[in-house]
Length: 296
Image (cartoon, rainbow, N blue to C red):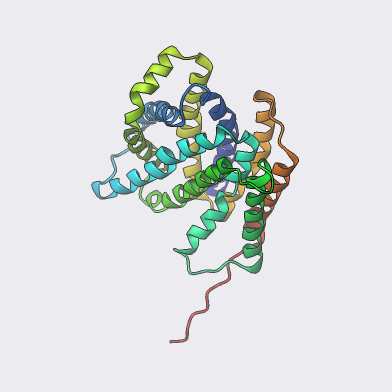
């Protein structure tokens, strides 16, 4: 298989893993707090990734790069997971997936700081359409007079995901996708250790299903899903890699209906459709315009 084909396979695998994640989180937070769930999730992921890295004989990162791994762990795991989980305590899984689908827009915005090229008119239009969709979703469940603040919390998670996705690209030039996910998770686990005791208590005394959902989040969503996403980012251009993210909401709607008996509202579907349409405009027709160079 070519590098591009491997990137597509990795992207599809990521899509499947993450579409199931929203339902798993909503079940897990019935027993754990968002911070406790994140700790249990990261411990499970650390064990699996540590074992795989050991048998794969992956090297230890250079000391000078450790702060970058720590930063990725903080943004992409120690902050992203509890922020998203907090939002999901009040926001339906399908609505949350629509909002997270706006992450590619943030990726484009972040990319503009390191790339002198500008988006085309269609790209700017797509960004505007997506933000209108986010606004509709954010006021949809609370009425036009009030914002759904938990939807805005999920939007913060989308921003964190965008920073994580863009932040790992420099490291992937020197390290494998397995190294990036493993050591960022290791650091994230260290950040979450203050919640170890309460997590242990709820695991021992709690129900089995929320615990298994949390283990799924650690082993499949985090360990496997983030590794396949790292491969996607490494082998595909940002625009094509991000395009796969907006296929996740459709799968999430089906999963939420099957396991949570959630049916998305008309307003959330309209807002979600605008988000996805805007992202599609950016990815398909928003090719950057070359910046004119001065004749010096």
